Length: 423
Ligand code: EPU
Image (cartoon, rainbow, N blue to C red; front, top):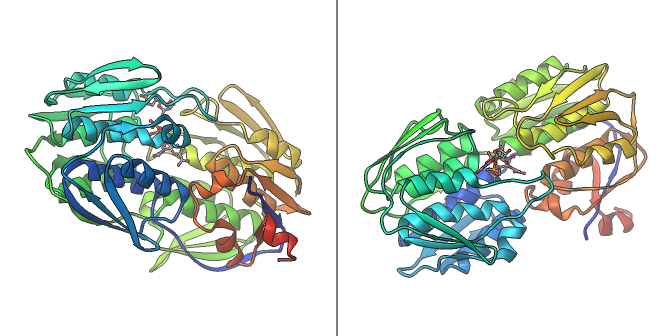
């Protein structure tokens, strides 16, 4: 089990390069199941979730290589397996995204049923019901979803909620379906627009991705394509939270301010100064943060992935804030860890009341998921004394060289082994 040690070291300063978006890269890789040939993806983050997706595709017969740290080449042969084993789905829920392309291209799929996780129960009913409306049939046997479809047919699918994963699975299935599919109440995240751009480059006919209605005219066949992954807005937000907590002035190169409108506005309300720069985003934090209420919503609202960062920032802000989670009911697990660091937070159902304290105090804490882990590390920047975040392997699922990158801004953040060497 890996640990990250954080020692406060004053304001941050410098320039940092944001990586490619995890939640775009994983889905682009899965799209390689759709057509035989070689794909070249650039700006792919070197994180363990990408390794897991590579492992999953490899066990389906796709050859995955990394010619450079942020490049991935996928070679899909004529034959392709159709099973996503439990061991990988359990490790990474995003594995479920292979269901749509397998049904569209291979006509069958055997995918382990994802269980609950640290966000509480996370159903996939919308994925299955949408695919069913396109003609797929499902059976759950021995913990696996066994799916078949002779030929998927276009359909008008209205999602109950703009689910990111369901929108992506349906998009990946519909590109090879016979006829036209409409996805209504589709998720509008930038990662979906990126996936659609890639699929269109492969020969798909998709319009409206990034809006609530996506229209997909099925095509006979697709061909491989090259693509550069969009920057990771959640990683960029994490560095903004780091500077908000430690104080200082940083530039985040490669960040897309247009993907982060609402976040930038909220952080402005909290007293930070953030502005687009020629290369990305510039941010300054030179006074105590002010409390604001935060409510998570599907894009373009405040992302649920930003919430642990907000709760952490509000823990030391001036005033009282109410934070409401509208996506994942169970996503407050890290709160007890922040309380161990001296935060004053009360949760009730989907709400948390955060009373800002002057200062947190370093403590041993545990990461329960990727974003909670990252939030605890940045909490350590604003704490007195040393903080040790255990189970840090969760953080490595979504952040490349997190301690190293924070160190490049002047923070004292180390892996436990390096820290004991006096690093
Ligand atoms: N939902 C259902 N039924 C479904 C699908 C979703 O009830 O069939 C519910 C979920 O339980 C949840 C809500 O709908 O309450 C939203 O879930 P969504 O499907 O949008 O989330 P996801 O696709 O499982 C992706 C990201 C998450 C991010 C959410 C929300 C990936 C790999 N994951 O998950 O990112 O929090 O969208 O924006 O893209 C992360 O990166 O750490 C992460 C967890």
